[in-house]
Length: 271
Image: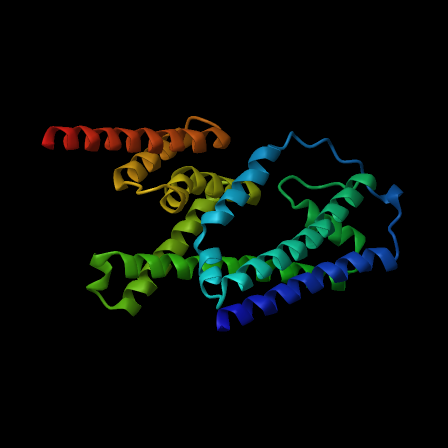
């Protein structure tokens, strides 16, 4: 309940900051377009990857599963998901609006900068811009905190060699190591979005098929899941993200078919 209340508070603050920035540009003073410099055309964006990978990751991530399992009734999960989808859809119009305004007014976007943050800074007052930055920082920090806690909880509870030690000490050590490792990895990326897409693509390539097939497939085998993970992990480094998932499914289905054939032959020989 405490986690849910915290999420509600954070969501309200973030949505309020978005609404404040949006209405601040509508009812506030509009900057003179002649004061801006036309920005250079941006490189092509892999829309398929950017839209598909976060969606597939959302279906298998632990945070969503924890919140769904915490509901008292399945109907509440469906209702809450529909409401959250509607709120998220409406909130997405705010970044789209600022991006469109930035392109229309020719706002120069520095290399490696966020279009949204730069547009809000140029189109709103310093006070609104500060509140907006606080909302973004809240979203980033809350997400990082949730992921670090989830990872340390999984490792300390699911693996036997961590159970032998003090759970508090093990959780603290794991959280520290994972956090420092994540911080070190960020130095290998020049773009936050690129880093996020890399993590989404790798997680989906390795885990999406085993997790979904464990729910949808009839009597799935552990060997099929292992082969799917290996195929997805290897193909991730050689093929685009939208190809790795079909390859992982092919490995899963082929291994399951081989296992089924062997069971049939064994049953025939025993008969």
